[in-house]
Image (cartoon, rainbow, N blue to C red):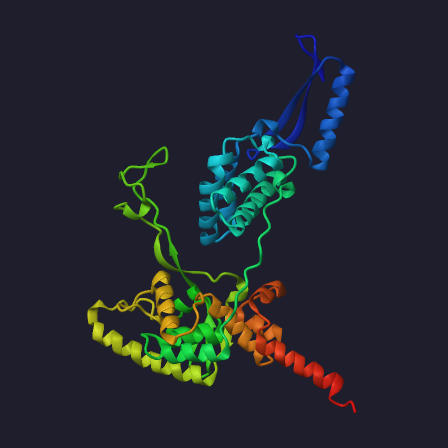
Length: 398
C-alpha cells in the first residue's frame, strides 16, 4: 500500500499466477488509507473463497463461445457433439446475443432469445437444446472466474412435451423382417430390430467383429459423416481457394464417412446372437463374397465390412435411412424412424421377461434413466401386468 502522486492511496494485490509463472495483480485505488485497507481485505476474501472475477477479461459472449468451442471443449467432447454445438451457437445465439459482454447477460436476455426462436418456428426441444449448451458454456466461464454467476441457470426455457414413441409390435416387426428378405442386406434390419444397434454401430461392423462359431457380435466402433474442412490455408479465417464450403475446397480434409469411437465406453459391448441371426450372418457373408468377386478391382476391401456399399465402402447414413423408409413402406406398416427400431428392440426384450440390467447391457446403456426413455409399456406388457395382478389377488378367492 502506498500513497501516489495523485494524493490517493494505492495497492496491488496478487490474485493468481499466469501460465508463464508471473504474478497476476489487481490494482486498487481509494481516497483514504482506511478505505483502501478495507478494499484489500474484501478483495483477498473474494480471492481466497474463489468468488473473484477478472473484470478486465470481460469478453463478449461470441468471443467466449469461440474460445470454449475451439479450445476448451475439444479436449473432452466428440466431433459430432462439437459440430452440433457450433451450429446451434452460430445460428441461434451469436447473431442475437454475441455482442454482449458476459457481465451484461441477464436471464431476461436469454428468455427474450427463446421467445424469438419460438416466434421463428423453432420447437421447444430445439430451444431447450440451445439452453443446455449455453448453460454448460457459461458454467465453464464461472469456473474460470470470467463470470460471477451463470444467468442461464435462472432463465426459464419453454416447457417441452415428451416425445411419445410407439415401438413396432411383434406382428409389425415380423412383417418388416419378412419384407427385408428382398433387400440388399436383410440382416442389416435384423440387427436393428433384434439387437437394437445404433445406425452407426451397424454400418461400422466388420467381419472380424462377428464370431459365428461362438455366436457372438462385438460392437467396437461407429460410422459417422464428418463435414469437410478447408486445407488450403488463408488469412484471417478466409480460405485462399475462394470456396465458401470446405467440401468444395480442392485440398479439403478431415471429412467424409469415417469410423470413430463408439458413443460411450458402455457402447463397446459383446452381444450373444440368437441362432436364427447367426444363420442370417452366414448367408450375408456368402452374399458379400459374391458381390466382391463380381466387382473385381473396383471393390474397396480396406475395411472388410459386413454391410458394404456396392463398391465395398461404408454406406452413407442418409442412404441407409432411405432404405429403411422404403422397407417400412413395402412391409405395409406405419411409418417409424430407423432409430425407433432401437426402441422396438428394447421393448421386445422386456416382453420376453429379460431383466432390465441385461437389456441395458445389450443396448449399451449405463444409466437407468436412459433405459426408461427407450422402453415402453406397450399393450402386451399392460395386459400381462393386469393378468398377473388378477391371478395374484383374485385367482384363489371363493
